[in-house]
Image (cartoon, rainbow, N blue to C red):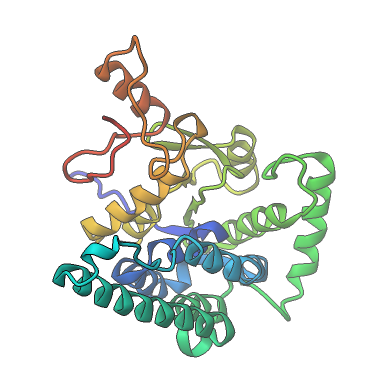
Length: 306
């Protein structure tokens, strides 16, 4: 009789940038994914460091998003057609658009000033941060002082994860806490890191690769039999938690990832790309796949190609 292989269980660490990206996704997709995370709060490694970074940057992300929305401008038409019915209708629609724009601005102000009653992302994310769990490093847990001391040590020694010219030990705190949670796991959980800012490794094509030293350190300090993975897709983590992922959620996530992709390809929204002279379309798409991932298609129509 064949031996049954035990199903692998996972702990998930979600970096701050992933939580903030819910303001860029929005709508039903953000709500669906946040509620899925809420169902698995006992499997999420987090703490006050992530919460602080979220609250520190939340307002800026919202303001940056609304700044891309321009107020409808006043019509300028030749006097000879001012009495033409379509012009009158256009003016009426413009007035209505300006009213709706003002309502949007008012809503954003309420989200900024009173998020508890106006910001669903804020409320759902804080349900995760407020959850009392052995995976949540927050006041008054005395472990936070030990974790900070370990983080200072690795920061001084130049250990990853850290950004170039970094002056904060935040990434080091998150890593040391991740190691502590994995070591304390009584069910021998593997760990998945969800991040998009390059602190924990590099991106190539459709995949993320954990920093070599971090992988070795995890094996040495936790277990050589346990797995650790890095991804820039929250949908990967949701599948590890046995959640069904909607196709539209994957599509929204791909848009976010492409917007953050290598500057070699510029902004797909602001600078549509032409196939370089002397290079075939096939060769250019192959290069795109190697550096960024699968090019857009009919299922995902935003495209940088002609």
